[in-house]
Image 1 (tube, helix red, strand yellow):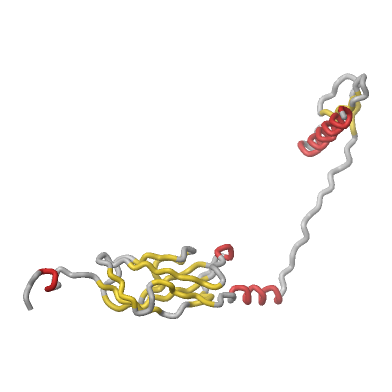
Image 2: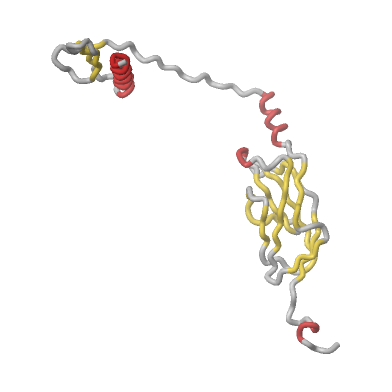
Length: 185
């Protein structure tokens, strides 16, 4: 058991010596009990060890062909659906500051590893930058009727899928509301 352990340590030292420096000398010595030791320092009775050159392997160069490009295009078109979950169609959202939380879902889920993002579009205009989060809070939205859409875009900004437009209404109270001010009609 003891010799097996010493042999293992010796082999580990040899591997370490071989990997740390190619130009370093390696010496082998045997003590009075027959234990073999490898080291990078010359000790009395140690013999230099001639190591074989290390094998070096270079990775092959991969060639791309037309078929792989076509399969990448098929992969980006893989969204079955993109749906706006909230607000619901024709829903009235009541928020005085004009904040509207929009939540989206896609099948399959967004592939953020490929650089895909959700782009929220309010009344035909993109809102902020595309994002991976499924919820976006729109701020400062004016009262009235609005259309919200969401697209899935790739890392280059190309549209991969689009939700149908959802109409919602934003209700913001006003100080001019006769019911609140107690005024008579």
